[in-house]
Image 1 (cartoon, helix red, strand yellow):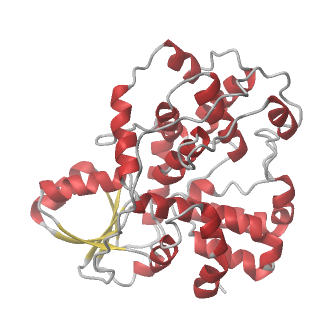
Image 2: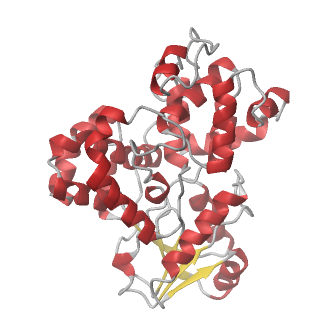
Length: 376
């Protein structure tokens, strides 16, 4: 299993998956056969989370070869990231509360044992090592991992979510935070996900057996209700000659002929609330550098260069980076340097997010409508 940080590799991998493996996706996707056999899943998430591959373009390519009914489950899984983004955009306080809560937790002995693969649960220890070494975990395994972390090891879900963000190549503020909340029973009130020994044994093809877990835990409870906040869209049109882009949305082909300069922001831990591992930072930087090589108008700017730029210029267009670390960062700089930022949204996102006001079932029911408008 190897993730190469360049768009051409991602496109070729997508082609291979569509041609050879997508037909078995629905039947085999829940099995984690180990790192040596991953052809039952797409392995596209590191590229989708950075939008080197755009969700809508992936689905369009899949539907050129297969009918919707043949690949419906795969399309639903791709749309989960769009849905999670919309859900968090409508409830930004969830992200704020998550990052603020991290300040209140100590890295005690139980936490250190967990992140150093020193627990009594063999499969969990192996997954910790896999996460650190490969910066990826199978989606089903992520659910087991989170459930064990919360209900068997009895550690705060927020620390687990931060641990994932630190090491996952595809970690993002919406999918990661809200998935951990869902496992805990907070996202859908009273409905949690409990890892079961038989389930892990079956879907790891008997690699792990006789796992001692807390299989009778009750869901977590929080005394807070998050009301929907209307999303405020600024001008979606081009206002300025310079466009600023973060690693959360690197699908910028449509902007290349519209700007004099495009500045890609190199990620760092300088202002992050959850620090990323060096391997994750390197992957992001290499992805950004690969995108930068596609056009002479693109330049990569680090933190200091960005500050220098903002000290002299105030008006920029900005590809909207979504609720999360990058938006927190640019919002801070916007206030500090009195910037005039025109946030540029993708029309597809805005349309889809209207269906994120409820659970995924509501969003799923509207997928045919989304496809009719933007794909088919």
